[in-house]
Length: 195
Image (tube, rainbow, N blue to C red; front, side):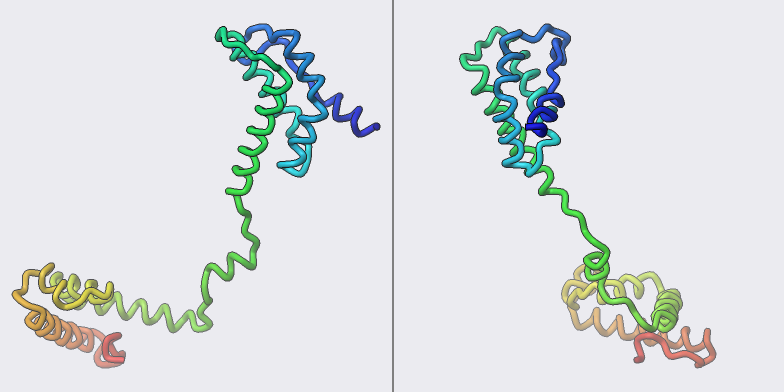
């Protein structure tokens, strides 16, 4: 009984709606009559009644605006309960869209963490230097191969007559880049494409 009294005290209907117009007294009385059922409807959809006063107050505000627009509402109680149920379902769907991810899920989504980060950084640096050893046309072809384009597409994009000529030209450009790379490092490092 005490819980019901606390819930009743939480409901407070303003005398003016959101547009500043006076709320019909019959509408306020209907809201007080349906409060307990409206609270149960909110509990049914949202599993708690903390948002019930706010939802019912919004329903009263909406009904007041409908009445101000010269539209009639035959049964205040039914209108309010239907509005409360509709808003409860809307809030339930909105809360289901928000899904919180815990730390373990984030780690699983992030993928595997490399145990040899230094090696990966060295490899990335070698690729960067190797790309710098290529000319602009060679870098374009290299990037297209990294993106898994086939030779026919590369030939079409780079202006070669067929796939074979594009592949031959790419090999020549790669050989030149490898020579530049080795000259730069005095044969201390292997270029990334030779492994």
